[in-house]
Length: 99
Image (cartoon, rainbow, N blue to C red):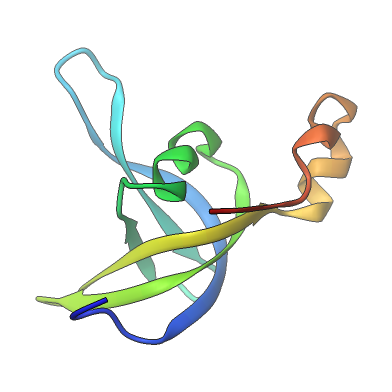
């Protein structure tokens, strides 16, 4: 993948960063515990993360940085184990999803 670095794994919270005129979230990022922010590329697995707003995730993917903004192309992700087991209705979400 031209312009993309080595694969990395990050952990953080999926946060909204852009909305359409009706208030629907159209872009999200991962805010890490060390206050880095990675904009999520909305293709493949990245699009799925829009359904996980305010959830803790671990993401593996490729990062590129332009103009002090980091963007991640998600290859796979998992939902935080503590969070998934905290609510019986969400236990089925625990696990890793791959392309």
